[in-house]
Amino acid sequence: MDRVLDELDPRARVAQLFLVGVPLGGLGTADAVVRSGAGGVFLAGRSQASAGELAGTARRWQSEAPGPALWVAVDQEGGKVQSLKGPGFARLPSAVAQGALPPDQLAALAGGVGAALHGAGINLNLAPVADVVPAGTEHDNAPIGFYDRQYGSTAAAVTEAAGTVVDGLAHAGVTAALKHFPGLGRVRGNPDTQAGVTDPVTAADDDQVAAFGTLARSPAHPFVMVSSATYPRIDPANQAMFSRAVLTGLLREQLSFEGVIVSDDVGEAEAVQGIPAGQRAVRFLRAGGTMVLTVTPDDVPAMVDEVVRTSQSDAAFARTVDAAVRTALLAKAEAGLLPSG
Image (cartoon, rainbow, N blue to C red):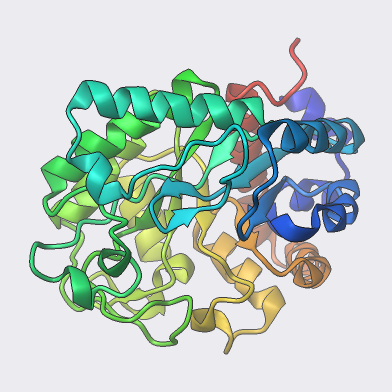
């Protein structure tokens, strides 16, 4: 890993901290993202393309990436959140239905999802959802329960089912991303479409938080995606993805998570529109994050510029960025995305 790190100039190192959205309906737009040296691409939207077509495109991207191999990511949860539905991709039941399956059947389903994604050149699935939606509140929980994205109504049920999904993906060579820490199971509004979403209940010692901790420490090395809601009982002043109390104090120190912390979308999400694009990246990294996810590729140059500029004038922030780059590259090494030797 150190050799790879030494080969990257300062801007190229920062570029590794970005997971950049490209529309599934226009994958040609990803070429510029790939050539920019971004850490990865996120296939946004819905597609009927076959697994074979996507595999060919992913191979070409990997051959053209100027630095380390790319993360190629997608949302393939099931139910209403399934991006890939073309030949080679089975229609998946919702997380609620998956959570009701016997363990062996869920393991087989998760393994099948992983195998299909791996065969299509996809190595990162932004799933499973680890949010816990209390029974009886599903309809009022706009981002998760309303769409049946939860695996159960208790932390124990979610931990067991989501853990099975993480393992099934990993066995097929696909890294999982647990979302949306510290949990969107108790909010009403959806941060994608509404500013100021708050969870007034969840605290640092909550069962929902503990479920993320258990899952995040899996030997499968999942990512953890952080929500853009605010949790007043943990940090009343900052949205979770911009909160050092949430990312560093809670996830890193209390829950002992050492892997990649990825933001929820900081491009189109209504929750972040009041913050200049460059500052979204700086604030997330300063709080202890690792990879910035944006579905707006036009924002990335300004974000990279701001991170580089701030690093040059703030030694403490520069050290934080260096640590994030090392975490990001270590994850790539663990996933076989760095040269061996």
